[in-house]
Length: 239
Length: 243
Image (cartoon, rainbow over all chains, first blue to last red; front, side):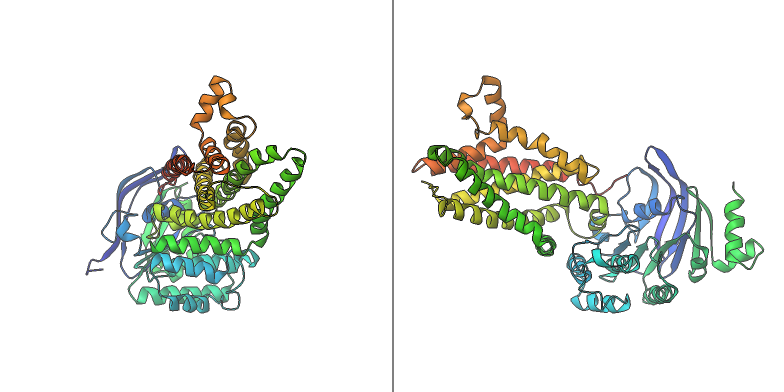
C-alpha cells in the first residue's frame, strides 16, 4: 500500500443505469486494512457501486480512485478481487476446476486452491460439478474464486447470503484474518446484523449515502442499542 | 499466452464433462455423410459433388451453435464480468476459445474425412492436410459468427434463431445446390460476399482437380480473413464496462 491510507477514494460519484441515475453524487473513502460494510435495502445501488469500483460499470460520473489508480485499470486487475452476487462459476466444471482456472488467470499458487477448498468447507465437494451442488455450496465456490491470489482490495457482493450461521461465522473469521494481513474489504449486505462485524459501515439507500460510521457510532447517533433499529431510523428518516 | 492456454484447457474440460455433446459433434456429421452417400446411391457423381462440400459445412454449423451458446452463457451468467476483472485480456479469452474449438474441429474433420475417404468411397485429388486446414478455418469462422450472434441475443432461445438467419443463406448460396456461376446475377454477387462460398470452392478444388492446391490455399486465406474479421468485430462487443 506504500503507506497510503486510503484504499478507495470516491468523490461526487453518480452512475446511470438503464437510462436513469441510480447512484447520486456519493462521496466516501475506505481506509486500508479495514472491513467496511456496504449496507442498505435491495435495489439501493450497492451492486452498482461495487461494479464501479471494479471497473465494469458504464455511465459513471465523478471521481473514483482504487489503490491510487482508475477503477478497472489493467494494473489493478491482479490486486483487486471481485465476488459477484450472481454465480461466477462454470456450472459444467467441478469446484476444483473452477478454482484452478481462476488461479491460473490471477497467478495464484496451486496450494491456495487446496487451502481455500478447506476454508470454504468444500473439500468433500471439490470434485463435484457446480451444477450438482446446493445453493450455499455454489456461492462459496464462487466466492472462493475472488479470494485467489491474495488481492489487496476485496469487493464482495453479498458473500454470506444463504449461508448457515456456522459458515457465516467462519467466513467472517476469514475476512477478519484477511484484513489483519493488510487487505481492505468492502462487503455488501442487506441485513443489519452483518454491520456489527464491520469496522465501519456505509449505509446506502436509493442511491444516496445515508451515513458512514462505525457500528457503535450508528447506534449512539440514533439513540438505540440495536442496529436494526438504528437502520430503520436512518433509512426511514429520509422517506 | 498463459491466459489463452488456461482458457482453452477450461473450455475443453467443460466439454469433457459433457460427453453427449462431444458425441453428437463427432457422430452426427459422420451419420449425415453416410445418409448422403445412400441418398445418392444411384447417382455417384452427385455424391462426389455434394459430399466434399458437406465436409466444410459441418464445422461451420456445429461451431456456430456451440460457440454462440457458450459465449452467451459467459455473458448472461456473470462469468464474463468476473473474467474481465481478472488480468485475462479479451484477446486471450477469445484465443483460448479459438484454440479449443480448432482442436475440436480437427477431431471432427478427422472423423468425417476418414469415413468419407474410407468406407464411403469418396476420393480427393488434393492434399488431405489442406482439407483439414480448411475445416479448421471454417470452425474459426463459426466461432466468430457465433460470438457476434451471442452479442445480439438475450437468451439461448434467441441465439439459436440466428442460425437460420446467419447460416442458412450461406448454405443456399454456397454452391452446394447449384454451382455458383449458374446463379442469377444478384445471387451470384451475394454469394461472392459470403465466406461459406469460398470454403466450398476450396474443397471443390481439392476434390476435383489435381494440382489445384494454389487455388485452394487462396480460398483458405479468404475464409481465414472472414474468420478473423468476424472475431474482431465480435471482440468489440465484449465490453469490459456494461450497463
